[in-house]
Length: 382
Length: 225
Image (tube, rainbow over all chains, first blue to last red):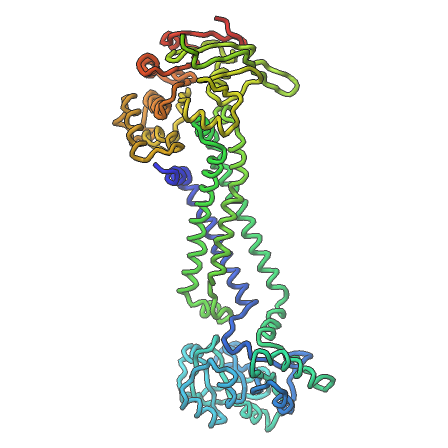
């Protein structure tokens, strides 16, 4: 017999209780990891390499208010700007979809590869799209979802703009972080709105270097200050975060649920450990009589609690990692969570919580056992 | 005459229960020689278990001296006392107090986990101890698979396995039938007479006390003879 096997036998002496404890830790940590991943995805959307150079420019009053197309020339003249494209959300319904099933954006197709360089599309398809004003390109995920292929026609019913669109698919792209969008000519939208509309939703700008980004942001904001269409330029990250802030304090909300989960878990595990140790006071007194010291009993109880919590963490956090790695969460959530990645950092936090849980839950019974006198312990009833 | 293995001088133990003080032991002085099988007798509440606990180093007196093999156990700190118990005292309890999830072999091996002995040497010592109490064939049995008498013999093997000079037994036959009690007392007597162990046994049973080489009576915390 080794000390480890002695601890294991004690931890598993009441198999049903040990199993229930492990399962409660596992289920709670599964939920904990799920919440952390959701929180991360909501508050820190993943970025690609080009994101650090991209700047979004929107109407200062509201993103729903369009900007005048004449601003293009001014932005292009700002030092540090490599290129700029209009970027207008169309928001059309496709086929029998009850709502907007995927995002459609009107842009300048000649600027696509400069601004969103990570997009992969065959050269002939890109060329065909640029040449045909009435064509579009769709992301691979949307093409797969709706079984679309190059050459198909796609009709969109406008929900935000007073027009419908009829587009031919010129190409299918992939390689971006979100391969669900559809891109089409901004000029086609202008045509559909009855000629030159003179309005764009937002501008997307690519800076020449990371050092240029803050200067370009300031310069764009300054260029349109005190005009009829003041703008708010910000980095892509800041732009994404502004959407998150529209949902209110979601971070605080999810964090509070996480805290409740962990706190409940501590109570459950501490209660279980207290029961497990209290009913063994007599045995612990015998161990003391045989020569085991306070610190050894303390270590036994700590190791027992830690072990149960660790097994629970492996099942719960490990299970979450396995589940979310092998399940199409984007499909399950209708695209709300396109990635749902259990990162090493989140796994680390979950295991740290489990470790602290094991320690905290065992502290009270371990201290009680350590303080107990042998004579008092021997008087304890079995 | 050799020095006593246990030398008790003016030992008192007073329990405070609120404002009331209860004297469990009063000015006890007693010598116990090596190899002696001492039966501590007396009615319930006479202080015999308290005296045994102090000698064994699991309780402390209010005042007085208790030297075991020249070591005053009342002066040792908690940690030193734990080490001392492991090396010098074997315990046999009335209710056996085996760990229910461990086999007979593992229960006997338990005190050896505190030593630096290699696993092979530990196995040899446990096997020898179990053979001494006649339970080598029950080594893989859990306590619940043993009779009361067998459980107590496993407890004696556990008390012996570290080869202590002193074995303390608190009512070791209290939960046993007549035959099992005789077997256990026979083993304790053998340990005293043949192996030279000093055995101190608390009992209120005159038949058990008859196995001892000397009987000491306690009444209301004082030695009467």
